[in-house]
Amino acid sequence: MTAGRRLRTFGTFMGLALVATVAQADAPIDQYGLFDSNAEAIQDLWTGLTWQRYGPTQTFGFDAALAYCESLSLTTPTGPATGWRVPSYKELLTLVDEAPHAEYGNGMLVLTAIDSHAFPGTASAPYWSSSAFTSLGPAYYAYAVNFQDGVALKTPQSTPLNVRCVHD
Image 1 (cartoon, rainbow, N blue to C red):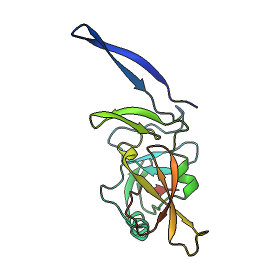
Image 2 (image 1 turned 90 degrees about the vertical axis):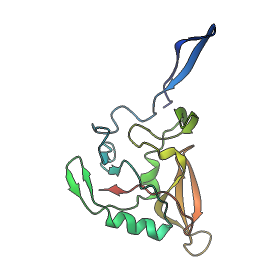
Image 3 (image 1 turned 30 degrees about the horizontal axis):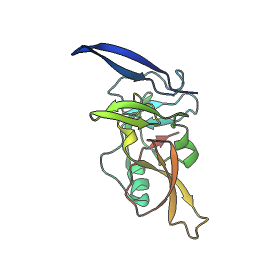
C-alpha cells in the first residue's frame, strides 16, 4: 500500500502559487477502531491488540521499559485496564506503514512510517520491543523499531529509547 499524496494550492504570495503536499497515513482505513483525540488507547481491529496512543516523554533502558509497561494503567475503549506490556518485535511492526511518507511537523517536513493521527509524535525516535536479540551472544541486545523509516534496529539493552505499551 502506498501513502495517498496530492498537491494542494493554498494561495499566492508575490505572484507565486503556494503549493504543499498533503499526505495521508498508510494505515488501512479499517485498521483502527474509532477514537477521539484525547483517547489514551486505541484498538487495532486487525490484530485485536490495544495500544497506548501517547508514549511517555522520558526514555528507558530495556528493563526499565518492561517495568514501566507492567505498572501502567490506562483507559481503553472498553474501560480501565492494567496488564500492559512491551510489545514483541512482530507486534510493533504491525504499526509500521509499508511506505514512509512526509508530514509537516515541528516547522518542517519529516519522514514518518506510522499513522500520526493514531499515534501522535511517534516518528521522532526508536521504540523498544520485548524481543531479545541473542545471535550476538548473551541477550544484551533487543530489537527496536524506528518509526521515521520503519527500520528495525538491534540495540544494546542499556540504551535509553522510547516505549509504547500494548494490551491483549
